[in-house]
Amino acid sequence: MKVALVSIRFDTRGGSERRTYQLARGLIGAGHEVEIFAAHVLDMDLDAKVTIVPMMHGPSFVKVMSFTRNVGRVLGGRKDIDVIHNQIRPFTEGVVTVGGGCHAEYMERTGSVLGYINPLDRVILNMEKSRYTPAGRVTVITNSELARQGILRHYPIPPERVHVAYNGVDTDKFHPAKVSATRAVVRARHGLGDGPVALFVGAGFRRKGLETVIKAVAVAAGMANDIKHIKLLVVGKDEPGPFMRLAEKLGVGDRVIFAGPTNRPEEYYGACDIFTLPTVYDPFSNATIEAMACGMPVITSRDNGVSEVIEDGESGYLLRKHDDHVGLASSLAYLACEKARRAAGAQARLAAESLTWEKTLAKTLEVYRLHTGVS
Image (cartoon, rainbow, N blue to C red; front, side):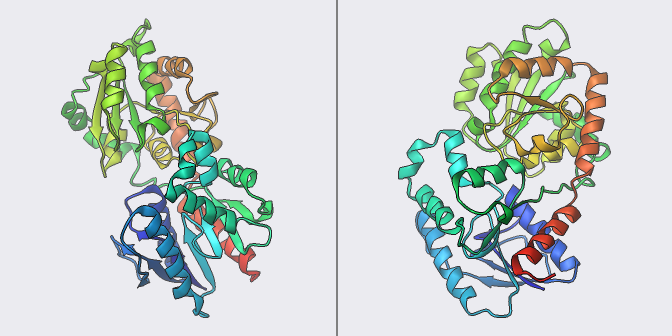
């Protein structure tokens, strides 16, 4: 079949963008024809036709509105396309993969009350409201049941039109043996020493739960076992100031190290010992599943869609509430034991191995058939 992949930006720099790239590569590899409709295309190494969709300059809401209008016009007369597959947002009728989940759910969970007067939020909410209806011709793919339930809770779209296809993970790139090669170099670069190091990876520190992790490190510092020497390495893009001040206030300022953003997260997975992400809301954290593939024991919240593939106490540790810093400190203390870390890391790797891009592609093709009615 011929598939139109629609996205404002096509590259491999973000989680949703990497998912789109993997989908395009899988579709082409399976013999399907792919045409990309985007305003910006980077890192293009696929055998796919590219159609650049014009987009106005200006504030984000203007860009989204103009792209939505223009991609509808560009695709309007294309009778040769079998499936239109929107990425991230429902720009047009067809299939849509919402990597970030339902925007209304995101705003509610993160307390973004002021967002309802933000022009971009209003544009996205109106887009969802107009597409996710009983009469609409939109079929949705989410990357977790958590995200699926968010859409069904806010909009009257029939449940049979909302499907789950977990993200895959590159278990060759994110492999324990490979990532350990740079462990000593990275630890020396950031002055991590020889003791246990917890790792936090994510952009948007507040939503991802960094405050909870810092508080847990402070609690752990008062414990009796080896975890009292724990350090925290923070990787990602955001303003560190408020969190540095919190760490200083709690007496662990010298234990919290900010590394900034990176395009090589695997080096940090290999350098650290325990992955922590007590996120407020994350439909499916790619960083979590990448860490698991690297053989890291993970501690995360049930507000992370990856929790659906984690066996609590076996392949990871799940917090009952995302702000439970005492529970997080307790899990850190348990994982201070190297034997416990190795056992949990091995189970985490096994869980990650079950998430392949081939499975994601197969589920997507199944949704295409349901959407078009062609078997």
